[in-house]
Length: 282
Image (tube, rainbow, N blue to C red):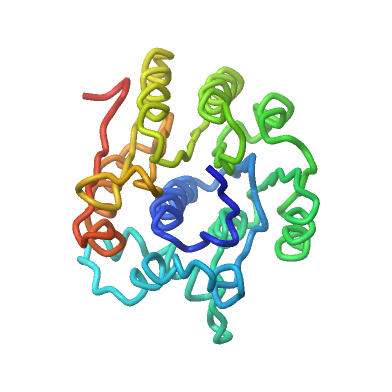
């Protein structure tokens, strides 16, 4: 799977992923104590949905653009407000900009929080430096994200989030995800770890879920959204996340949010949402 993100920014998978990211950061913000975010595959940080790459696929038209225009149920609208307000603030100048995870994390973070963004691609890292590098809370590293997990955990803040969102451009990415999850939890057992994965190769996804379940990490939440009730094998079928140590109410909040989002971003106007515990909660 070749996932060059400039072509896909703001699509349904981004909406699902960033809704969860915003909820997690909002929970972390409830305590005054600082936290740290480690983003292992940061990308360019910020995207122009009016640019040539995004316009070539127009995937955002069925993703964030539909969500911004939708009349959401009251509870979902309240929970999504930090995320959607961050997008609207970026567009206050009339642009069609969309935040990648670095820009969204910085928008929701506070002065006392710190952010490490890893990006090995020189061109993408240059864009990241230009777009978010001036923020004094951010540090951009030309480091392999998998190596960063062992190099930079645990953070001295002893609370925070590890976001693992690889591009899935190379074989073996699911195995690296499972290994990265185990390493992150071993070094930062009190932290939240959030992994994103595409639902396309169903055999690989099933094997990955089983491997994560066998690890028996405490409080492991599986969150998946299919973009149609019936999966297709010729395209991205859905968006998945594994979240270890999720905030207390995140499972219920995500059920509300994703149940509202799925009909908006699904290809068939229905979609399918699955939020369940692999370990740790009934």
